[in-house]
Image 1 (cartoon, rainbow, N blue to C red):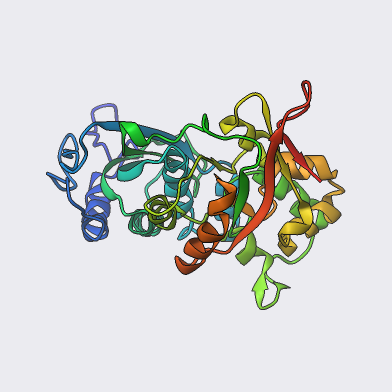
Image 2 (spheres, helix red, strand yellow; image 1 turned 180 degrees about the horizontal axis):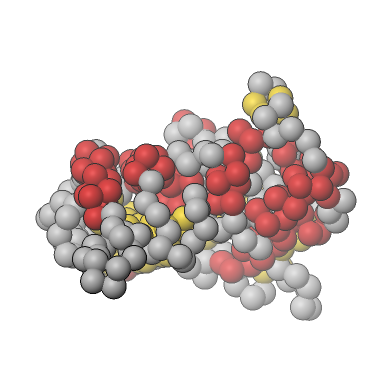
Length: 346
């Protein structure tokens, strides 16, 4: 190229027109997520949100996360419509465990070369996740960075902000022996353990598009979006005392449940109390994965754990079922003996 040739940003690999086309595609998706408190739409330098006036002592709760190596499967399978919901779920479910109502969400989409259709599919999943959580998709960032990512690949990150009344923060401190542990069914592996999932799939060398679980293929099962528990659990909290919650993400049941338990207590969980989805049985068999490793890597069919008083357990089960959740009574809280692990799966 002649040293005097005029260069443009497009010559450097960044297509501003494609970015503008994506914004046009995103605006109607974001509009569907609008809720009380939103003071401005997509396109401003900053997103404006007013905390609902019904809160007397509002405490803001924030969470941020990504989708992890599940994105690698999205690239391989050319399935981009569900990872956006995964992204939202990771943050809104996290802040939910402290009793927070999700208010708004922002995303960060980064790629080497912007493919408008792929990006719009991803953001469509983000918008759907926001609708399920009742929060507004209020802004975000699309970064096109030539040379930073392999062709056809991208990265995702996002964060949610929620609010909870100061007197109603859930922190687990009221949990005592005798309380009941409820488990809400997951939709699959959600967004955790996918480095191991991918290794097992690679080693098994099977057709991921062949029937696997009924009429669903393995590709369908592993790309199923993370379940968003926000609306059913917020409704539950209006009727029943919820003492503690744990979002079962990286670390599985063994490492996430203790995060909400007082040091002198143990959550004793009973494996027969809930059915383990076929995906996890297959992963364990095909990967020769030890039982303890299964419970500290995967959710094994339980995506959210809720601790309630024993006298409220049946009411909570009924209310969650009415809200469309599949819920199981999976264990009890008991006194801890010495320095034993705070989650025991029997």
